[in-house]
Image (tube, rainbow, N blue to C red):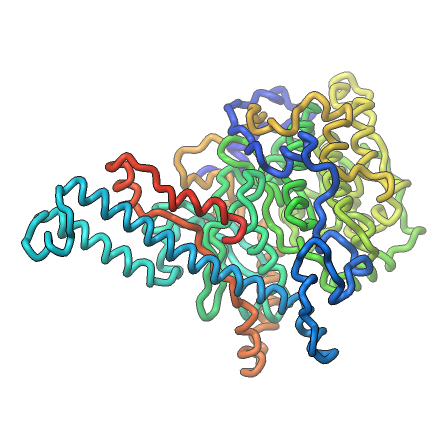
Length: 578
């Protein structure tokens, strides 16, 4: 298996003669009705209204009347005591109510769809076999082997509908990722042949580390959209000890791998990738979520070279109070007197040296807040603009080769971030061979409009489109453009752009991840009480998800009959529910 570094975009540094010799391919046109397309077309003139995008202080009071006819317009609290009202209005109860509603919608829609599908298959079989009544044909032994085969397939389909999705439903091919709470495998669903990235997480660990809400948030986001800019969820299921998320497999690896091997990007390439990231994040905002922890690792490269956003664990309404306090304490601990003034050249060299010495630095799960907005770290009120700050930091790294506030140690990075207005500087190259890497005025203006105070920061996709740096691109047509880098794939299960978990050199990157996993395991092995374990069972209510799928023989039957399955197509209408 080839390593990621052997197949990713060639290094793009002042000393790289091969810079820019990338392959190209035609992309896929963006969906015309996606939130980003409608925003750019002027059909959406204001930010999407959603409770998760508003500060807690701005939220409507419990039981307030809503003239728009939402659930608040009902007399939900009539006859309830104070503590009962508080319980009914809690986020957990509201989510369970929504899950129950969607469960019944899904159940009845799936049943009606099955009835319609079976009726269509029956009529098609009657036309082929020349029979009018299946019961009589069976009694009179008409139809022969064709009738026997048809009835056998229908019985098999009924058995399959009763079977629950489980790990054995997938063939595990190889491991492609590892985190502190679980692993990610490349897998193929046995029945349909679908290739997916199967994430396995331990329930006890998630409960112990207070990560259940983050996993549920990721599951909810993945099921709420069909946009090509966000990674799709194919299935979600659970067993006694684990929860599983089967997501679409994005074979080009994450953008950190590409960036590590490309160094500084040309402005036209930085513009393209940054624009795609803005559109992807806007799709998340359109769903009512803020990511808050964007970094290059959160963006994957698909088979056509375009970007997909993933890892939505922190994209919820509020950070864990413990984490907020931890971030504030860390930020307050650094003193202004510790600020070390370095030139951009010094910080660039220091960053490259540190990354070369510590192979796990770029993939650190603890890491430093290189891309996180100060208002998030300080625990202050914030809005979607924090994601634009993060994307501004990523754009800076595209153009300069290092994050804007990186330091020689985590403490120095925290200090730089606390004093960001003093630290942020425009790199200037004076050597003849490096002149091409000087930022243009318009590029630097884009960076400083993003890395800025919240009240002055760019906060919408329309502002991005209007900025001179991004003006050469039509953000609604990005997927019809050729990407600067296109993965060279040998098959649909090619893992060449991911780390090889059987390669000792690749595994060095996961030293910190494995240490965290061991620490977590020690905490969990302390043992939870039986009452605590029983109390956690209800946390996973409504987690299971299965997209509306066709079996192999249903596809063959549809092709044979030449008929379009209208009941199947109707499921697209309910895609955001299921």
